[in-house]
Amino acid sequence: MRFIYEKSIMTENNNKIYLDYAATTPVDREVMKAMLPYFSDKFGNASSIHSFGQEAITAVDQAREKIARYFDCDFTEIIFTGSATESNNLAIMGIVKKIFHPTGDHPKGGNFQKKHIITTAIEHESALEPLRELGKAGCEITYLPVDKEGLLKISDLEKSIKDTTILVSIIYANNEIGTIQPIKEIGKLLEKINKKRKEIGLSKIYFHTDAVQALNYLECRPDWLKVDLLTFSGHKIYGPKGIGGLYIRKGTSLSPIVSGGGQEFGLRSGTENIASIVGLAKAVESASTNKEKNYKKVLDLRNQMLTDIIKYRKGTVKLNGSPKSYLPNILNLRFLGLSNETLIVALDQVGVAVSAGSACSGRALSVSHVLTAIGLTPKQAKESIRISIGKNTTKQEIKKAVRIINKYEKLLV
Ligand code: PLP
Image (cartoon, rainbow, N blue to C red; front, side, top):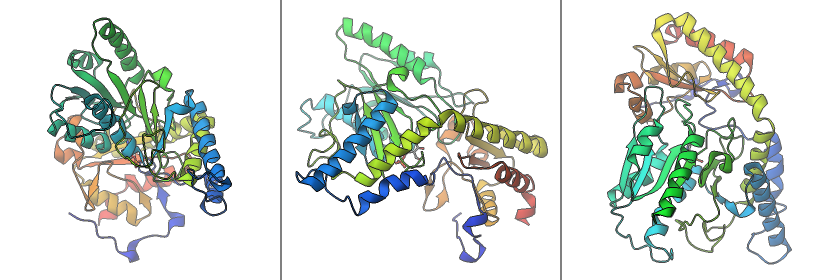
């Protein structure tokens, strides 16, 4: 089935209720204000020696410092990319490429056999796709299963480690069901294992996490999490689209996947997107300042919504995900016997924007690999919608959305 949106049935934005903040967030006013001068007045190229260039590179340096302060890391451990998709690709491909081509100069394709990477079945496509590619090229990839709440078992991870393991890449908080993985515990385990490996001459296992959905609400300092690489994105934290970042622990060698002028410490060539870099730093700063307040606010709204829907719909709605380790802003619900496409389109027509959580290809919904990994059948997965709340969502919006969702049959006639 394909969506065909007709203009006539679209409601005006003003009265719409946006509940798809896990897909993207609006840019905060203060973020936009910080960015604006860098589109016109301060337009220099950060690689230029003259004062215009110096102004640009100063802005990049200040943004990097701000983000480094937030992550409690060194300035040189943060690099800017074009998206979290690119950051995930760089973290995963960059480690493998470096190991096979230690100089980073001769990426001839190589023979990736005998190198092993561990991940989970519920990563974002931007991590899964490069991993699939590496799998085709000969790397051995272990996709750890998760339980019905979406949680991996640390003992499964420990058992899957081999002498040939070079990387563990695990999403911090899942973008579809919100389940939070025990990243800190995995980090501690890998630290212990790496100590032993060093003693016996085995190479280090690097640890990467995709923290895109976590940054608004969870502790993300790499030293606290004990990760070597951490991905983040601008547009999930009220910053601009098309800008991402990667924390890379000192001593973690990567080969670039985009080569050229050598910007970003040689790891990501391309003229710096100054306005977006400034915007990303402002968004990170603002997320850190208001983390606890925003956490509590969206958690209350989410829980209220869940209670009201479950109570009204009785046995016909089920929660997908974990009732104990979850992001405060994501609700993934299964409406028994209903098609999510039908429900999403019907809700949109009355001004409530939710999503299926899974990827859209050609505007038709695919079956979510996350929902099938937690044990749902493809049919059950297609009965599920993702509602994601933002820091500006109001109680009134939630109440109204609940009223509409609870009586969805009225929309389908
Ligand atoms: N990782 C996760 C968990 C995401 O939710 C997303 C976006 O949907 C991405 C990565 C990709 O982010 P970007 O849109 O910046 O490429």
